Length: 521
Image (cartoon, rainbow, N blue to C red; front, side, top):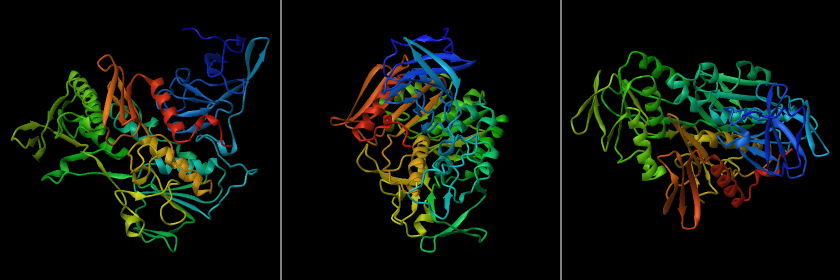
């Protein structure tokens, strides 16, 4: 489909509020949109996360939301307002005269507090922060830790920022580790969240291989395994979670997927393997199954439940996921557990032995709360935080898989292991470290990829009274709504991206948070 050259002008009289037009300018795709102030704005047309088509997204106020993974951008400035996108959009000046809109010059990228990860952030010297701690230390270099560091610099904080992480690789795009990267469809250069130079350019001290032995909340310092003391003014605990392991003989044969090193190891093992047993029909287990099937391995999924993902998605989507994997050659052994394994086979509880020269398990994770618990912070299946993501000790915050917070969706404390949730919590936690005192009310969102089918899920329903299916699951055009009484808790959908975005907006407004109000600055 041809798109107009917006530098030559295009009729604008029919472009009403909330509508967009896809065009191009000087060889770049451009999105033209009319906001609530009646003016036209032009920004880049592709989401800076995975390149989602913003013309298929949703305009709310002066923001546009990506249809794929629900990132949001300010149409007036191009600024990224929320993850999973981290970079801003380019923008252009627009002239509208006599019913014709013309895109003119490309504007400079947002600077200061809004700098993109690929550039030096610098900060905004004209704006005073409500609170400037002497230093900020972030324990954990995953989704939450990395985005918290980015946010601190974007907001204009110029004090010392340190990231301590036990791993040996810089923060990476973890969702890709079980999807395209593991399947062999994404090169490793796509995996780091930021270029290596970004940390030095933004004066962020990234310490890899740093194991925290103890946290002293009174003296406000961390002690590392090598005896080094690391003082802090404010602390963010973003330690994430670790895989639950199976207590079986020869369990050293079982591989788990959490880090880039784990994914590399599975890829290497797959090169010499013929058959893989995937223990667990979780999202991670099934994504691993799909990726290894794409590499040509014989794949068997072993799990104790009657159907995969039923507890989260319900029976209809659970059956669909199983049938989809079976259509690609994956075999399921459901209502089964692994009781033993040797060098070439796994043994099931009924006595069956299955060929498996590679074994991968995905049976859940546990939050890394040891240091927080030993320091006396309140923990209960996670580090307990309030609506500002602050623990019961002032200036100590938690975010990501380790944090358990009061969710406005369910009305009860929850801990949600989603990449996007962790990143959005990081933004809120970083701003609250700087004294903004903003409650975390973002609606949870995640996506799961199975071959050419993506399931998008917005909201949170640990349990529900009823669910309703609309559309055709088999035709990959459906939505499933999960209810508690008259309250909509969550929506799962397949290729109904706009509906997913609309439900997200409804939930946000129910909680009194309207991202469409535009840029906070």
